[in-house]
Length: 122
Image (cartoon, rainbow, N blue to C red; front, side, top):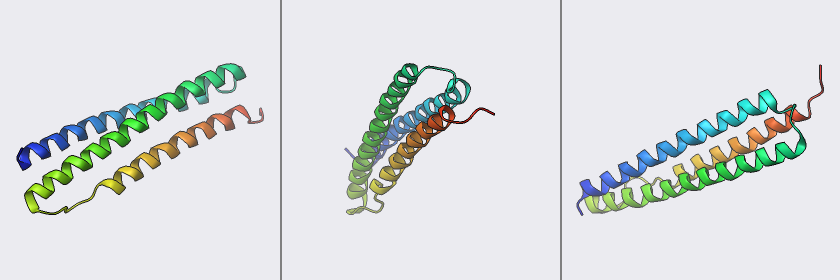
């Protein structure tokens, strides 16, 4: 495999990562809209089920994003090593920070739902 093939594999992984990130933002947006519109109107058991499904889906997307970042880093590092003999750019920290930022969005959205459910009526 030459450097071009290795870069191509890394770019294909990048496309998969972008799809996962877009799906994550779609799920997050849907959850926030649902929390705002119906959060105070549904029962506790419905909220537990809704939150459980949301957390499972979000964790699956976060895992996939982490996996894509790990694969991108692997193939990009192989390509750099083949081309330059050393690693020029390390993407590991960037991937970890992206997944951490998305995880904090999940926690923030759960807090948003909690604040909708526990707000005092005007």
